[in-house]
Image 1 (tube, rainbow, N blue to C red):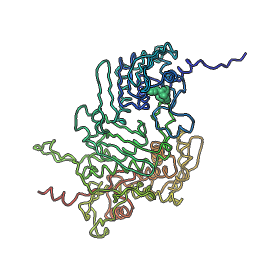
Image 2 (image 1 turned 90 degrees about the horizontal axis):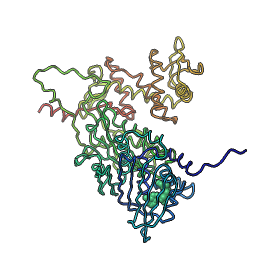
Image 3 (image 1 turned 90 degrees about the vertical axis):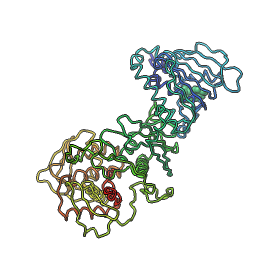
Length: 591
Ligand code: ADP
Ligand code: MG
């Protein structure tokens, strides 16, 4: 007897629904996206019990014909793509034709819809994929969908839902993702007859204020604009000033009008802020990407918030540079603010019983309209723009009045080198300076394919986790170029017989693990990317530590090497290396 048969549609739809509709929030998302695709300019969402018993979306979009309204609930029924090719040029939100079929498989649905050209509309009742009735009705142009008793026929799913409070938060989050990119569309959100959000048409900034500012008109003054326009991508948006960072930041990425999660680009933004944020606080940001849809793939996940870009590393650099530029324009980069980072201990303040602890100067933002890390103001030219984003190009200004070899730097607290420069008192972070120097050195060793090694007296065998073993295999050559002599020892261990001349024999294990960790964490998967991570990680592990006293010659040598680099102001991961206390600032302190 043959045992294979096709599943009835109602069962197939229920299975698909498990993927597409996990909770009321996914239902909201699908319905509102359909309204947007239908060209609506006014969309209302009404829910009861966090959408469990009732979720309604009313739009003034195109509406559907009598037949289309029925067809819409069939699986893979869509008006948005016709052939597989269309998938690569998506400009609409939906395209799978699964949403309505999924919703009606797990709820009781009522649809009222009418097109402009039709005298009467149509009203359909569907429950568990079964059309109970369809009849003509009087209704405004547009579509009005009610979804009642979600998961009425899937008790397991129902039980899976969280408290009303959590589900309402999920609903609002989905709603935010949409309303933040459609400021020119009017939205309303009503929960249990209470209007929670009423969003008039406005600009993106006004929309952000309306959603998160809670009536506080100055909410968006905590942000600075970012904007860049390149061959492959345009980036616009708003990033929080460092002093507005908090424990509960709003962080949003959008691409072509669609919300996305992107941990790697998130990392780019945080990198730009490196060294500016106190402890566990984080910046808010609203970043809007615009890119040729052929360069992204939105189809990798059914709920479509993860998006794959063709050239993520370049975009990472562009984003990093853009955010840095804006932070720099507003001179938000720290000037004399050493106490913010964990690695630096707070200097001892003399105990004065009369001093008021609140009177310590708080860091302030000084606007420097002339600052431009690229030392150019025109739009990037087509050729060679990538290099612009590699590292900010430093202006060829004269740094010192006297030759560096004549200057005797003063080492302060075994951490900073102080020296006179053309524009003021220069303060150099010794550890970071050395990181920059070593980084360049390791990169060039890898580019040339040779490194300097010191032999170990006894080989060291180091165990690795399975994924680390795979990674080790990939980067083996580059590790040899920076000076490791390394061979696979067993299924889960490598033996090390030589190490970079700069590395301490006691630190081998942690240096290797740090390196693998950094590569994995940043998702570096192209050769030049992991090379950067190897160089950075090793530079950090081998650079002069804080607390090390330097002789005059050592300090001078370090500075000479540093100022020989094409880029010395920041470490490769964006931390400030050199800070200048300007002559005016010094003068002001004595007024
Ligand atoms: P998709 O959006 O992926 O095409 P859906 O199941 O969400 O699939 O919708 C199926 C079809 O129903 C859409 O392609 C569209 O033609 C129609 N439709 C759905 N919602 C609306 C709406 N609010 N207004 C007009 N047409 C709609
Ligand atoms: Mg849809």
